[in-house]
Image (cartoon, rainbow, N blue to C red; front, top):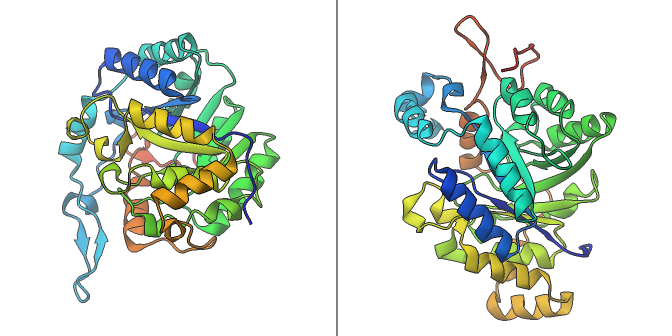
Length: 332
């Protein structure tokens, strides 16, 4: 049922775990490279690109059913928090240069369309870009990214099946190399809802697929990532930290250098050795396999609703242009 990849590539996501410090970025890259990372990814997001959307100020709950229909994420505190994490274009070049120094491939996720040109400006080998699952179906953004990048890794967790198919058709028409990653956009998520069989469903669109892992380290350790490798993932992505888990927002779903070394050693085992280790460490591992076709859960739909429009581009008149809108943007 599952194809076997020659060697799983490990993507390390430094996300917001740098706390706005360039020195921490450098230390993270060094630690990840020495521990076995193949690709190190940053996030190109700016607090100034966070639009205020009224329904998320207090959240919404259906009056009759009591079911939540929108999460609560007030704009002011969120923008204030993100402002401490802003990185400059010079920081981007520093990130790229440092990755090159330590022999790993740099990659980023861009969250606002008008930032694409400036983020693509710094020199980076191969011009790789990661697309968040909330923008998997942002077709105008994908077309604009394709003007600057050649290789795409696209998460699909917060995307409907028909949108994934359309994205694959678009990427092929643009002549771009692309891979799809399955993920579950519930933070954190449990093994029982990983549905790692979804990776094989994605192979109908592209030969290289993988798993972006948001499971909680304290609960499941490296289980989901190891099972994905055993099942033939071409890529496994995990958040990464060199700080204690309670010192950053993404700490609870982030692995440390020792865990990365363990994951790297596991991917180097033979398939038989991987199967033997999984059976011993995680006797109920099949619960993470699930089904290839699944519907997003309620939390995932709430997250799609919020995060899909979390960042946008200013329209010049006090309004915003969202990544999926067929409107031109002025590049920064």
